[in-house]
Length: 179
Image (cartoon, rainbow, N blue to C red; front, top):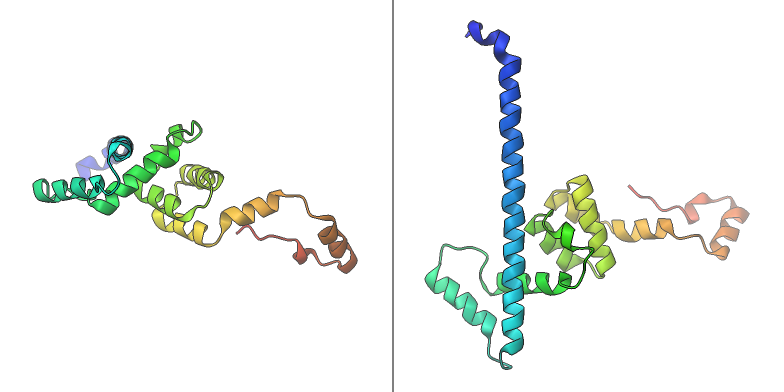
């Protein structure tokens, strides 16, 4: 074993190469899954438009997957509706197209269900990418109202608040904690 000691640093370099390749592979697989969910969502959306009211196309598709591919997870009625929602939310938005494949499906689900506006969704998408947020970190940011606090901090103070702050010397009236 002591014969390998001088090679330790060189061997660690190989481990770094392996870990970097695994990370790239993970990102590529995630990208393909997101694109697959979008494509399935597009198909479901277009078929649902053609279907007659009450045709229950999505339910029939979910039943098909359950009967023929029981080991395939995420293709139940709820999952299929989420794919359709994903497609319909972002289909006409050119700003979002380059962002969608950089987030995990779990983070997309949280953003889709918790955000009220497209601007808020884009804000959290960018934050996830820049900060490499996990699901829990994203949930914490959304649940704490980070977007609203950030937006408030970007707006100029109203004259009434500014006068009150100057009169009282109290900065906390208008201060918005960002962290």
